[in-house]
Image (tube, rainbow, N blue to C red; front, side, top):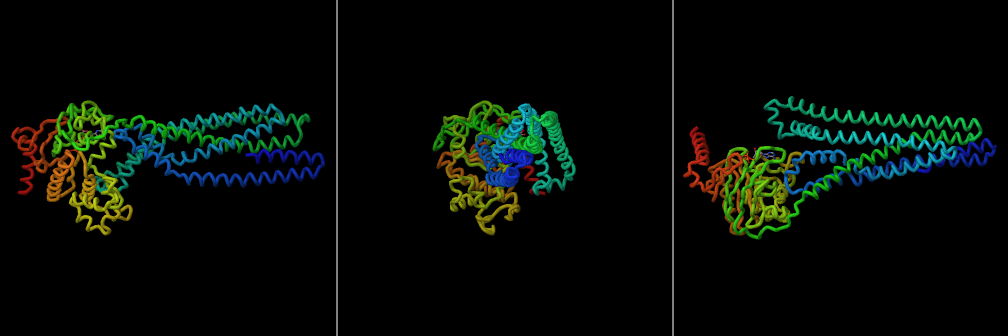
Length: 565
Ligand SMILES: Nc1ncnc2c1ncn2[C@@H]1O[C@H](COP(=O)(O)OP(=O)(O)OP(=O)(O)O)[C@@H](O)[C@H]1O
């Protein structure tokens, strides 16, 4: 920070001493100049290395982990469908290095600004008129900030296009989507759409960067005009004998380094400002999480007495206009097995998502015994919920872990994990794996790849980890399984439902398209276009000869035909 001003002073003293014919003073001045120059270069390189090391050490991972932790604290799924939230997460994912770097850039900015101040003060010792240069030197900083702001705005505006481009790229490059793309021949069209999304995003950012470059150019033009004026004043002073030749050398030395000093200050400040604008999404995310976190603290009962009741429940997904559920009122008695059936898109999974507090009803109430589900702490309620969803996760970790994370308290309890594996009728699968429960899953990590049905069994086993749920949900639990396995698993889960009913009064909810498999349920709910069309036992619904009887008849006929065929 001080080496450049010392260099300028030492050079001035050297020149003036030479002109005074004082070789000793000139030699001392030259030595000081050489030393300060060497020290400046050395500290400059050390500073760069240190900043790099510290930024690496704290690492991008720290910010990413923080973002993940914030997202994990969000209670429902609806947040993850909000574009304002997703846009900020995209910015944070791309800018986490900048964020880490920003504090160190702030320190560098302060040091550089102080050095700039010292250099300008040196100029002022020659003539106070040169102090006007401070105003001219500030111009590039101000203009540059304006440019930075427009770049940031463009990054947020184009984040959605970037997400789309990445999504299409993943679709085209991952094995899962590859099959369908090859068969359908949709690859080139997807590539064109990806290109279009990329072009839109890049065009927006390019325009903002050009604008920022023009702002920077304007700032430098203002500075150059002011600085040229200052030098003209100096030359005039020296010619009139009001300044020494040493002063002129000092001013020229400062002039040569001033450009670099301003450039470095500008870079450090713009990185700091850049970091500050990247902090905005982080702060927004934190306050969003704080503001939207459920304040409900009530605990669910240890055991269900009456059951779960829905009272006029309606729900429309954020960003859509059509209700996924409309005015559903139904009671799910404690200890019962309730099946939900209906055509595609009739609202079955949505009902399950409301029961598991992934979404909240727009109107109406869900009661757990006499407690409002909305008053229960989401964490406490979910600790008493076990669920296997139709879009189950495929966790590429060890097999035992992929099951054990269904209840973290039992993650390392091999006996509990094996019991959950047995509940999902998956013991033979584990026996065939090279390292049993310790087998790594996923080809990407040199592990074993499972078939769709085997992955589904891991999801079922995971859902069987909790031993005392009040609500046990199986959303299309056997969609990827063959008919004998499906039958076997349903038998097991019906037995498990009875066990849970005895232990906690749990309600077991089974969502299925296949009517034959749910015929043994205590109560069957038939959904149609988000409304509860009918309910009753299998026999009651057949006798009523309504929608259920129609759909059941169609499926039974289709099954008979396929058997004959
Ligand atoms: N995340 C979402 N955002 C917006 N709309 C959604 C979302 N999930 C579902 N929907 C819509 O809500 C309606 C009900 O969907 P839901 O998944 O509950 O039906 P479902 O009966 O479970 O269907 P399926 O048998 O195909 O699983 C559908 O019209 C669907 O398009």
